[in-house]
Image: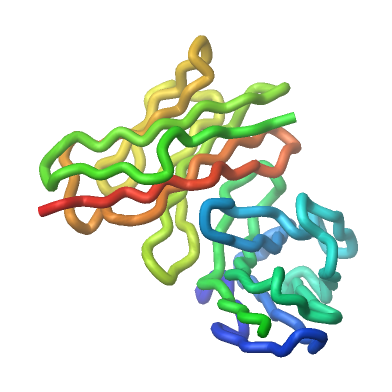
Amino acid sequence: NAGVTQTPKFQVLKTGQSMTLQCAQDMNHNSMYWYRQDPGMGLRLIYYSASEGTTDKGEVPNGYNVSRLNKREFSLRLESAAPSQTSVYFCASSKQGQDTQYFGPGTRLTVL
Amino acid sequence: AQSVTQLGSHVSVSEGALVLLRCNYSSSVPPYLFWYVQYPNQGLQLLLKYTSAATLVKGINGFEAEFKKSETSFHLTKPSAHMSDAAEYFCAVGGLGYIPTFGRGTSLIVHP
């Protein structure tokens, strides 16, 4: 099992550019999540998907959109990147919302 | 509503010394409590979790944590630190039907 995979690992964008971060899990989990990690701020939830076909906003959703493509895949889109979106982005999955989360290796994004 | 406070953004210990990382929580439902570890340039992985069974929970790598309801605490301990324990540690609080909320993290520094 690969667990949770994320692509790309690194990305540099210019202000105003768009991009999509991809995430896939092979554990047959129902719930998937996108977090951002910034120094001193811990992990902040951007969006989550409790089950296939549903998505909900987390703590910091502004500037982002998500798509739960199928049970395995959950993508995060930045429509018009801003320097404030420079961060490390983690995707995670769990069997149900209250269960242990399994994290991907992260995407390090820099917006110039 | 749920929240978690990790006391101390950095904790420094000598190799062989006791490790104590503090976590206090607030929860409107019976809590599920988690400790995760993040090694440099990696995603988070579960160390241990409490979900209303035994109050003393043993995890991987010799770590354990004790749930104290009266103190709303879930502190993480290890009797003897190893150099390989140097990492970022996150406490999280959730509950049945609730996605966990993460603390801001504590960086553990281990000196030879």
